[in-house]
Image (tube, rainbow, N blue to C red; front, side):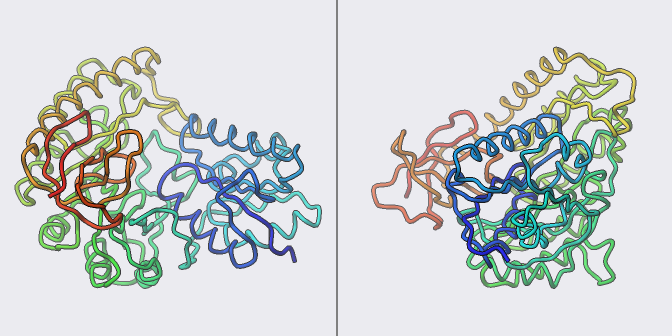
Amino acid sequence: MTKDKLVGVISLGCDKNRTDTEKMLAILSERHTVTDDVEKAQIIIVNTCAFLKSSRKEAVSEILWAAELKKYGVLEKLIVTGCLPQKFVDEIFGELVEVDAFLGVSDYLDILSVIDRVYLGERVNAVGLPRSWQCPARIKTTPFYAYLKIADGCSNFCTYCLIPKIRGKYRSVPSEKLIEEAKGLGQVNELILVAQDLTRYGEDLDEDVNLTKLIKKLSKLDNICHIRLLYCYPEGVTDELIEEIRHNDKVLKYIDIPFQHADDRVLKRMNRKGSCKGYIELVNKLKAKIPAVAIRSTFITGFPGESEEAFENLCGFLQEAKLFNAGFFKYSREEDTPAYKLDGQLLESVKNKRLKKLYSVQKGVVKANLKELVGKTITVLAEGFDQNELIYYGRAYFNAPDIDGKVFFFSRDEVEYGKEVTVTVKRVCGYDLYGERQ
């Protein structure tokens, strides 16, 4: 049995992947010492993403960088986990000879035994089928907030997406397991619920539970101050869910709805079930039912067959919907997806031009949204101090970590991080707000 090695973990990809990393860290810490300084680690584990070509390129780059450390006599073993080996282990096992072991998206419980095997001289392919795995213990790597992955996999089968091929069909985590995990996180200002699609939660379970009922259960926990919802597919945003967001004081008035496009023909080719008209109606309903709701979304441009008219329909939707924030991506042609074989593939130059215009359109919308807050007082979770600008920063309810803007503010008194402060907004700068603490 291999004992007390210094282990460093590099976590790539989305917040859902981060929760897997945090659970793996808890398992590793049972026998080994976890370090933030990976260059000093005897074992490096790279937990990978493989959703797009760009993410696979990043993963391989990190793996090769880590492998170089073996030359200096500190790093002894290199292990790769997650999405990249899950989908591509047959290709990379023979190519990435620097790697001592590979594990897939559901194999983290085997990490200690795999470490034992590689120290006995074995090169290990431990990739299994995507399946449910529970480990309520976690080493939280985020300050003041935490992610709670309530399901894994996806059963929506969008034509551009590799997720079902990598992580399998949608699998909800039983609610009692989620409650146990959430309790174990300690005091959390903001619990962020994540899954490929939150709104499908519970449909595959025997228990009588759905997303709204899960939110009610989590809201009863004393250690959870606020709850944020990410990745709610539009078709699943029910009146019941809207009313829960509206009336539950613990639920932040924020919702991320990945529309992906707003042209009916493109949506159909994407195998998305919605329509532009339906999306506008949903946005308007949310704004009418929930005062000051912040709606965020993501969109793909350059999808096969996206005509100029379809693209302009998307731009028009952004101007009409006036979403609080949005992210945009160029379509990535991924082998083993139905969209790979579609006709009407677009040039990269066209994708780049359209991506730039979408950001320009949304920037104008965001500017108008944020200007309405100038002169108003808002609640901000203080998170740190910017040494360059010599100013504090934090997030309001309409700022999700990493993907949205921040609120920068001056304070005459010292600020305690992790606590909420009241800030009067003075000006707008890009996607950020600047103000003064009251």
